Image (cartoon, rainbow, N blue to C red):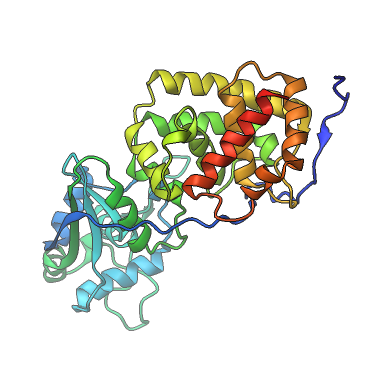
Length: 368
């Protein structure tokens, strides 16, 4: 067969540059039942500040941006000085007995910054803004004052004020961390709602996070997705994880997909297995091959179909004998195949449908 000199054209889709549009998939909501302990604590603000300084309380890396303005932080400090109630924070006890902030970063860091005397972190030139309270009522006695400028009585009151924390620890199972994924998902109330892959990166920290990001940055992969730069919600990273989780193991897949991907992250945090090595090598070759002969493929309805991408790419990833001729012939056949098309229409993450889809793709590409 003669390969056309230009890439085979697929339906184009609008590009936002940093947001990946995909066809919506229906996935079951995981039934979650875990043995966890929940214990409240009322620690002084002084203790909380020192715990942050010692890394006994840590801000997960995905939350590292502090977004409050100094006026918001000032009103929080004023609330403590006035004895007004402040909403509780949620902390997760990790395997190192550190307390990871699930919800409450802005409050906790505002407290620490005020005790330190500086608002926010250093800028590019190593400078920090002095933290003097502002934006309070015009007649407030605290306006314009740093911590060291408060009356000794007010300093003591602030140091000894308490903030309730809800400490959550997963007891059983003790290693997979799946419970904290769902706790993050439900309790995080930050200004931007976190997406599943962002939560996974926080919960299942390890070399796999960097490995997935490195693979995701491949220019051929980004071209296949139709992106100018990686997706801001890490949906592209999640697709790489999805391919890895199914690579050589799709016959063991069990729905729901969300929980399946969580387990894949949890059990492959080190990303140092022979399977991980094979996947990384095959991923680079596969996206290079697909990008060379297709322009924005996997779009039967103008936007990316993750199920179509998954079926074709898993088949190619697992068979290094598939060359450009077989790939092009097989892809065209797949798009016209009624059996395969049925696996793209609904409940695409159901166990039987997913296995039928990948099995059919492998069969057709093998015989192309």
